[in-house]
Length: 102
Image (tube, rainbow, N blue to C red; front, side):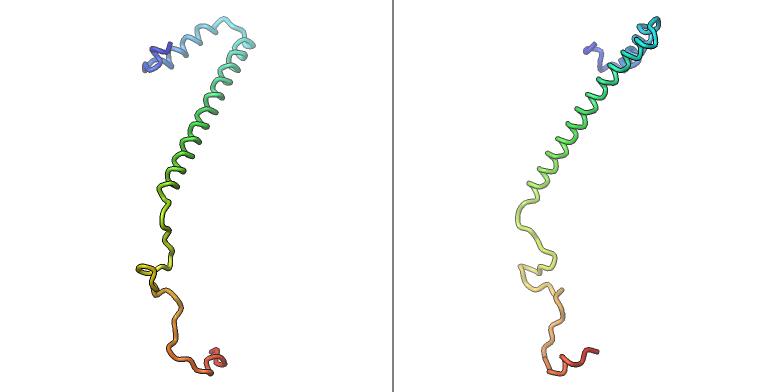
């Protein structure tokens, strides 16, 4: 069976085989076989999810590893100088500025 697994007709052959093999079986026997097949499917789904999660975790670790280094800040000017985004700086200060808020 493993040799023909890659064949385009593999699924159709397995379906036809099961249909002919279970033709004379009772409903209880078919249900028992169905439960076995569902259990196999569930195991395969769990394995695929675990493999996908592992691959995703490895990808995130690789991205985190590649992103390490000197961190840049939002308000950092050229070579650490003032970027001009700070509050306005007044050149002159008078005592009236404290009392006149409008």
